[in-house]
Image 1 (cartoon, rainbow, N blue to C red):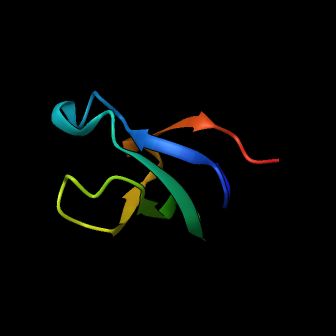
Image 2 (cartoon, rainbow, N blue to C red; image 1 turned 135 degrees about the vertical axis):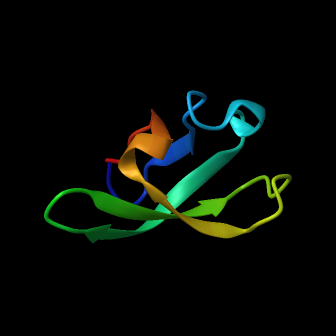
Length: 64
Protein backbone atom coordinates (compact mmCIF):
# COMPACT_ATOMS: atom_id res chain seq x y z
CA UNK A 1 0.00 0.00 0.00
CA UNK A 2 1.13 3.52 -0.71
CA UNK A 3 0.00 7.14 -0.58
CA UNK A 4 -2.89 7.67 -2.97
CA UNK A 5 -4.37 4.17 -2.77
CA UNK A 6 -8.10 3.96 -2.16
CA UNK A 7 -8.86 1.58 0.70
CA UNK A 8 -11.63 0.29 2.88
CA UNK A 9 -11.53 -1.37 6.27
CA UNK A 10 -10.82 -5.09 6.25
CA UNK A 11 -14.17 -6.83 6.91
CA UNK A 12 -12.39 -9.46 9.02
CA UNK A 13 -11.72 -6.76 11.63
CA UNK A 14 -14.49 -4.22 10.94
CA UNK A 15 -17.73 -5.87 9.84
CA UNK A 16 -19.92 -2.78 10.12
CA UNK A 17 -17.62 -0.35 8.31
CA UNK A 18 -16.25 -2.41 5.44
CA UNK A 19 -17.89 -0.21 2.80
CA UNK A 20 -16.39 3.12 3.90
CA UNK A 21 -13.80 4.27 1.36
CA UNK A 22 -10.74 6.32 2.18
CA UNK A 23 -7.48 7.43 0.66
CA UNK A 24 -4.04 6.80 2.17
CA UNK A 25 -2.45 10.18 2.87
CA UNK A 26 0.59 9.20 4.93
CA UNK A 27 2.71 6.09 5.52
CA UNK A 28 4.81 5.41 8.63
CA UNK A 29 6.88 2.28 7.98
CA UNK A 30 8.51 0.49 10.88
CA UNK A 31 10.70 -2.62 10.92
CA UNK A 32 7.86 -5.10 11.52
CA UNK A 33 4.87 -3.38 9.94
CA UNK A 34 3.49 -0.14 8.62
CA UNK A 35 0.95 2.36 9.79
CA UNK A 36 -1.24 4.13 7.28
CA UNK A 37 -3.09 7.40 7.83
CA UNK A 38 -6.39 7.36 5.99
CA UNK A 39 -8.66 10.28 5.11
CA UNK A 40 -12.17 8.89 4.91
CA UNK A 41 -14.45 9.98 2.09
CA UNK A 42 -17.53 8.93 4.05
CA UNK A 43 -17.11 9.82 7.74
CA UNK A 44 -20.16 7.79 8.82
CA UNK A 45 -17.96 5.89 11.27
CA UNK A 46 -17.30 9.10 13.21
CA UNK A 47 -13.83 10.24 12.17
CA UNK A 48 -12.29 12.07 9.22
CA UNK A 49 -8.77 10.64 9.63
CA UNK A 50 -7.28 7.60 11.30
CA UNK A 51 -4.13 5.50 11.64
CA UNK A 52 -4.45 1.82 10.76
CA UNK A 53 -2.18 -1.22 10.59
CA UNK A 54 -1.67 -2.83 7.20
CA UNK A 55 -3.84 -5.85 8.09
CA UNK A 56 -6.77 -3.57 8.99
CA UNK A 57 -7.07 -2.20 5.44
CA UNK A 58 -7.78 -3.58 1.99
CA UNK A 59 -6.88 -1.77 -1.23
CA UNK A 60 -9.86 -0.96 -3.47
CA UNK A 61 -7.91 0.89 -6.20
CA UNK A 62 -4.13 1.30 -6.34
CA UNK A 63 -2.68 4.70 -7.24
CA UNK A 64 -0.26 4.98 -10.12
